[in-house]
Length: 451
Ligand code: AMP
Ligand code: ZN
Image (cartoon, rainbow, N blue to C red; front, side, top):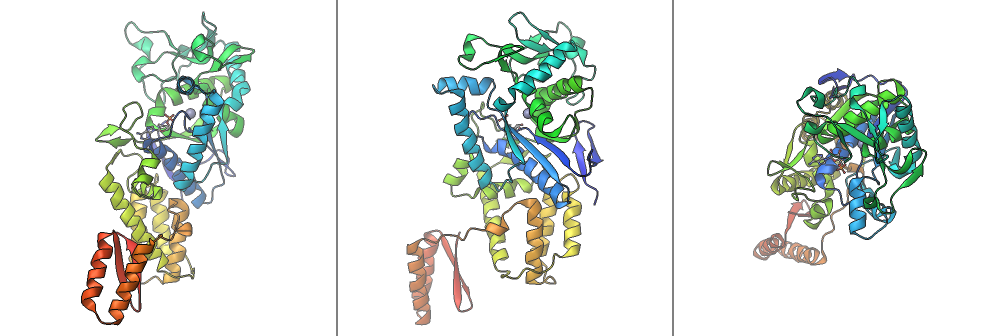
């Protein structure tokens, strides 16, 4: 089945054709490890994971690299605030990130690359750009990319260059800036006192890399000079990805990534969820409310990755209830695994391969669950097959732990039923419900579940 992806570079849905049919070279911008990621950040990593799963579902062999930004303005700033070395500080949040992605059922990439392990590669690209006179050294020893030397600058984000506006030009040292501020950006930042102990002594001087060069260096070192797919959130489009394209294409003389894909915002009260705005939730906040992180994944799959998703607790709780119901229905299918239902699979794949239309793909999943013409064993095989793309974790459903007091009340109720004391049995059912559990009679036995 041909896969179609929306390519930000062309603003069109295109048929996916990798440069080398034997291996898809896929790079995702990963976390900046200066804090716990918020669930908006996880939208980006869940999107990348779904994309990889869909490629693999279609039998592509995918080499996926995700970076860990362990050196940038924010990691330096906050490690100093915390009185910790950059390494100690960033390693802590890297580990927290690894724990979270496991809880979200994200398949780890082929390799996580830490920016600090690729300083030599960053220096080499910067030297090439200096030799080609596309980069230049400023008075303080920092090295900037001259955006006027790259005629295609702005081709991804469609920005209007500063020199096309009035009174504008200059350079910017900060890693992050907005579209109205497009200027020469820092490839290498000469050490100053605010960097403290964070610097490298290199052939291009004492200092540290700019954020954008990090991803060019890590992607090319692991995947070669040309990639198939590069992903990130929409805010990465400018300046980060625009700058990655500029420096990579100028250094190699080749086009950098064939497809650029960006996930839309997770919003709260219709505003972007962001650390700086203080309107964010972490995965820990979900867990503290008793919500399985996979329910967040499930909720996101109900929206297309290119649509904004407005986060509300009630919607997430609804997704959690639906997911638990799905797990229950799956468990009721028994132990036998039959054949994947071909008609359903074709429909499912048609949707997910159409620029990851997960909302439509989920309707196929529910149709399978409800379809009385598919045997239990075949349903099980089909759901397991779909789950390779969706990552809802049917294979490792955790049995709900029912507390001892609830089990005790359920036993008492069973006894009352045997003695035909239905009044008592109803009272016990009500008490169980008050404690947040539901009891469902199934022939001679019963099932307890959390409401
Ligand atoms: P950062 O750690 O700030 O570099 O962000 C990591 C990833 O999260 C990037 O791909 C961002 O585009 C993405 N991101 C940040 N905030 C949101 C949000 N509210 N919704 C969706 N993606 C986001
Ligand atoms: Zn990046």
